[in-house]
Length: 277
Ligand code: NDP
Image 1 (cartoon, rainbow, N blue to C red):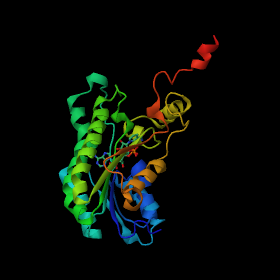
Image 2 (tube, helix red, strand yellow):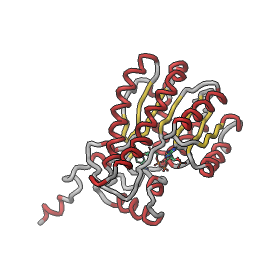
Image 3 (cartoon, protein in one colour):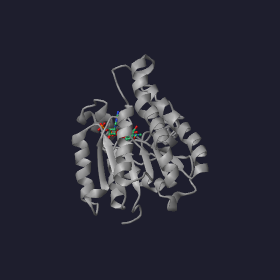
Image 4 (tube, rainbow, N blue to C red):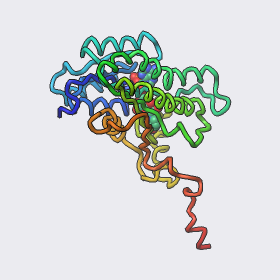
């Protein structure tokens, strides 16, 4: 497939989950892909998947780096430019619900900084640092947000939810600014997707399965009845990165959540049972 032939794409957080599936889909469609994350072993596993679908190993670039570190960001960008000569598409996907045992309004200030650093500040810094390349290539940015951005509250993780809400507004502001220079910016807001997201929070695998199954079986949690797959979100990210298919979408956050964000408290009750009484 040649849909993205000759396009240089950076996908942050591609050692796992949504980022990995997105990297595979871009590679299948002919892109030159820079994959990155902190975990070298997991990145190697993504690389193996990519090598199965690319025409030449030269179109895969692996950078082990911490995105919350300025040097790490520079390393990713410089490596992509050195290897592929340009940047056409930036996917700001890396993110995490960072935990330290504190919840709700008791969440620590240290946690606040860490949560905003990876989910918001790193995106801002990557956009600032790649801007000149993206203007040159008339490129695209897709940020990965979350339905946690609202309008419903996520009382256990206020900083994560607030960081994603900030990301949505940042997406709109930057989109309006950069479209004047030919760069399109959008974001996606996934619902519950089966990835290592809860694993990264320290939730054991069995408990993760239980939680996801509970959500899927509850009418009020996932109306579609199943959790999303990383590939479902990858399809949306790739669509928003494809100017031929989505050129008129600018500054939007597109929700893909199996209907989760549509549910109001009234909808989640079985009123038919009550009416029969
Ligand atoms: P995963 O935990 O599977 O993947 C997260 C990725 O982010 C990993 O590749 C991880 O790489 C990377 N990452 C985290 N912190 C850093 C860091 N400091 N520096 C570099 N890379 C980092 O989760 P998902 O695939 O689910 O998450 C992808 C995005 O989707 C996130 O932004 C998340 O907030 C969002 N999302 C996920 C939902 C879900 O239900 N899964 C729902 C809504 C939004 P490494 O560990 O190698 O550093």
